[in-house]
Image (cartoon, rainbow, N blue to C red; front, side, top):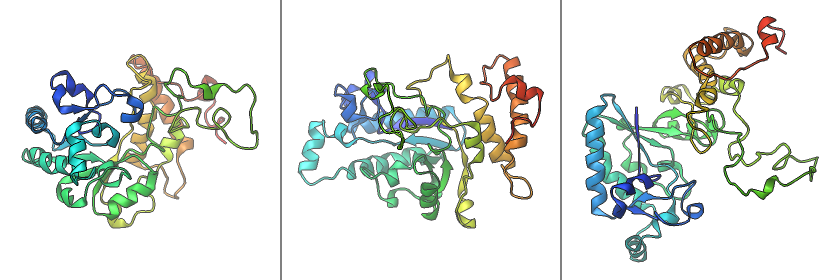
Length: 319
């Protein structure tokens, strides 16, 4: 599935068309979730010309039936730095009507190529900027959930939407690595200030918003249809692990992705429980260790899951 960010996270578009990107030279901390700030301007006519050309080009290159349009983490401050958007809001327009205008216009660009449109859940569930379900036809829309674990999966499927699960509580591979801020003074604690309560450096998130690190066991354990009705469960198309690049690049990608993603693959393809409903982690570890060594032998730097002693003494490292 081709993933092309539309609306939010689009600072890179300014390399060719700076006139259609808002808040490009503003402080990122107030205008984006992370560097670099920039969002497409839904009031600029040129925006739609460029977006249509890009969608047409990409759709002609990739034959699959899904087209991921992004649309997560839209920042109202970023749009509000634009003079024409300020005037629009002062004249009675609303912040929610901006993404609604954008999606209403660009949605047909995608479906005209007989593709199903995929968005992040934010378009519907964001508490700050969202759109009406009326512009997201259930027949041709898939939503990816990444917040609140099974709760948001329930919200989307109960509303009738096909859903892909990418929960940050289970499937985000970059979690647990602290913050990328260079002067985070929160780490300056030599002694635990409150031993009775988890805090930033002692049992807390250590600066990682989605901490802790998602172990293979945590990933394997997730039931992506948890608490869904039979009909709601049918709307869950599958799941995906996610690795963002704030603190990851090609030098570490193998170890961050593998073999944890293999654990997800087994759980989704074969199930994570046996015939009696018991979790299969005790036996899955043997398969994952074997698979990890096969990957290493092929030059893939997959991270180890256990000490070598455990591999030489099967089952003796299980509780």
